[in-house]
Amino acid sequence: AVVRKNRFFTFDVLDEAGNPLSVDAIHAQLDRVVREADRLGSDPHPVGVLTSDDRDVWLAGRRLLTESLTPDQCRQNKLALERIESSILAVCLDDSAPTTREEIGRALLNGDGRNRFWDKSIQLVFFDNGRGGYIGEHAMMDGTTTTRMVNFCLDRLFEDDAVRAGATYPAPTASLLPPPERLDFALDRGCCDAIAASARTFDTIMSTKELSVLMFHGYGKNQIKKFKMSPDAFAQVAIQYAYYLTFGTWRGTYESTQTRSFLHGRTEVTRSCSVESVAFSLAMTRNSAAVRDCHSKLLAATQAHSSFSSKASKAMGCDRHMLGLKLMLKPGEKAPEIFSDVVTARSGTWALSTSGLVGEHMDGWGFGEVDPH
Image (cartoon, rainbow, N blue to C red; front, side, top):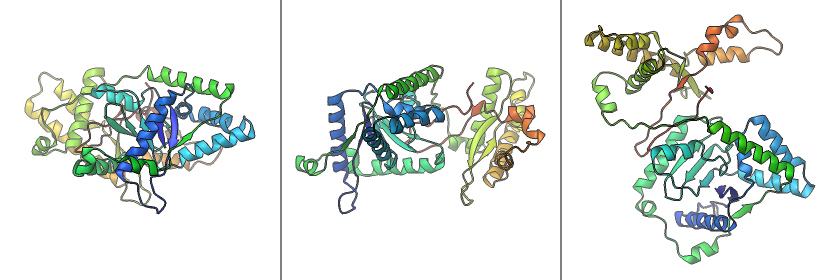
């Protein structure tokens, strides 16, 4: 599926013989989409924004599209949704041109919410100035999996001279391709009102969010390794120290750790806030603390973090275990007191979510908050 000007299009990426289309052919189809969407202008009733809303609200909106109209209109909308949802991914061609890391990050994190279909697990977003990025929906897959896909695509892009140079296709090639299919939705006043309400909700929520990007070039993972410390653990302890300097306290901190060595394994939580990281933060803020003492506590904190992370990757963390116990409760069965304990609730509310992914050609990576604050 391709989205441009809040309008949806689809086309096949395999030819009649089942062979993948060439880069030139895909380029030609995307160019057709852009020309047609720009000719029509922005759809004033962006159906995609419904998918940004609360699940129950989106369900109600979906029912308006597929159950409240005439039989022919409902069939039309069901077919359009099926075409979008069965597509391998969504390509979002935005008509904006962000340049700074903050602008690009904000455009990818949320943008205006309209030129998207937020239920898609994979959305590739490209802007009019050639910049782009990837949006992943977390329910179906985790960051490490999708990062491998992104890095594979970027590696191919930088290795393949023909792709890097840009596609050039003769007119006959494009003319032989069936044109992309435009997916139009039939809407009545109720549908339009639901779309407008979801757009207002999106704008209200996003107006409360801030995004800032700091690129640190002082040193990197190679230098940290020379300190005999894990780069990840070093960064996590630094985050704990920075949070303490800012807020004067410590809070539950989430770092995702993969458990993919197990069949159907996904993630466990590495809790970055530890007794050792607290001791390091306190030592760093005491004027009387010696450098040697601070260093020893930093070393202890990073080692503790690495140990916890290793255990979590072996399914020896606590959070998924607790979740499993909670899910085993039968309907109407009273939960053990530990689940209603104030410490349990506080420790499971993530004030900081710190997972990170990297790639040689990636300019940055981020995600929305886990808990609203």
